Length: 316
Image 1 (cartoon, one colour):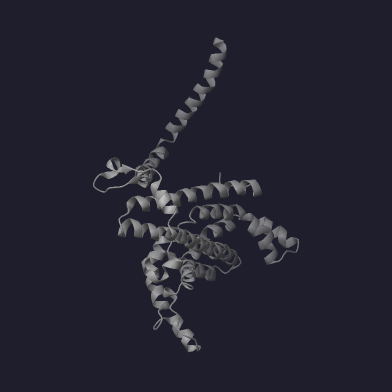
Image 2 (image 1 turned 60 degrees about the vertical axis):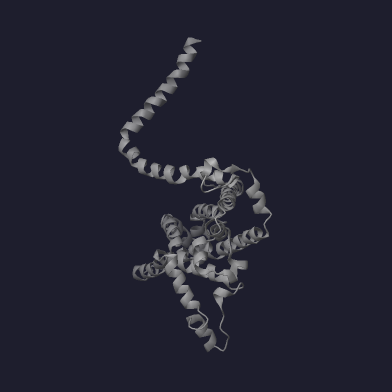
């Protein structure tokens, strides 16, 4: 019995000893983790205390601890609201629209840039498509408003010159979702292509040589070598994109929309802003925000699970 206990203790002591040696050996690296961990704890975990507001009838003067506890009342109120159901529908439609357009485009750009062998042209194109990412949404929104203005906007001037009638893109519920997708595509797809360009650069060049020896053209090389080579990255980015499907670009929409396009452009993020900041219904807006976060969490988990089951690849 004593020998058995000693035998079980010995491996644990060896593991602890190895762990201590590893920590001492890489002490400088662990010390570098402290600022990042402190940031995450202070600005990600500590604020979670505020989630309690979603289950209270929050009073700004009494605080979180002193406010009346109402359980799931705010959530029942949320799900029974016709306005929230419309907002939820808009969020899904705009997010799916953005995914359908802006998710494959960076992959296509990366594949096309991979086929450009003159470095001067390649770097010029890369710089031109990357630059919009570094503009704030305030600047991009201002440019979009000027470009789409009904009377002075360049696009409407072209439409008028061709014999058409000016279109109020930012006041029309039919066009507004397309404006959101178009401005986000212009701003982000170039920068989003960087990760795919890096993944393509990591593909073994011998695979392309073998494909050329077998008679494969450029299109066939793309289909049979490039896409399979970056498939794991595509899958990773898609799973991460699923987690933000209910965000739909709140900052962008706040800067572009107006009450006229609420029926098509109002999303959960802007709804939370209006209810929480302008109407000061903090408990209701917190419940809506918590709902958005929980759905995003389960979408990431579900997407990862389905990917693992169907393709054998997953993030974790």
